[in-house]
Image 1 (tube, one colour):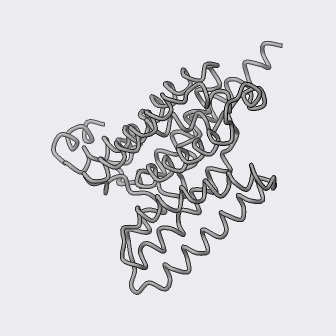
Image 2 (spheres, helix red, strand yellow; image 1 turned 60 degrees about the vertical axis):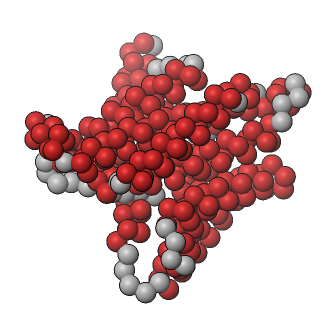
Length: 275
């Protein structure tokens, strides 16, 4: 830890990595709470893997992969939401289709692009140490958009999550807010790509909120706790991976996953002894 703190004061790339992890934890904690409460982790996973298609297309045509990821994430979220709400198809089937098609499109375009691009591998597995100043501004902008929209429509999102039918009776446009919620989840997925990569993004989005929901019942309290836990996991993961030169993204997820399993075991043991 001492080695990490000394390096943090000297190296700008570590400072950017820490700032990126903390910024990502804000959107992750807020939207991850909705994902956990709505039980749409699989949906978020479908969006995350569909993003690869957008990245592959963008890279093939010479654009920034992250721009393609943003477009693909929003499009995938809207397609999943529209098919569920309007066509009444099974949600898991639609998610599986989006997941598979997105991955297939991404692989086709990546393999047709000459040369090897290490950045795309970084997007898959995450490389928080490569976060640049532009990435920090992007994450901060996405955070601001998420916080602003959640603040404006907090009551509507609450109704969508806990009693959609009653909200419809009261005149709330549930479908519209549900689609907006999915778009915000998509933005959060894009935000987390640089931190832990596409493969691990769902873990960091859901685990802090899942841990917080074991001890708290208020939606707002879960959000705050999830943000704090996300910041703790990303900071600790960065510190623990620095000395041994380990991949930071997986270390962050190992910390979050271990904490989740530990809290689950403690809660389970408490229920057994309470009988």
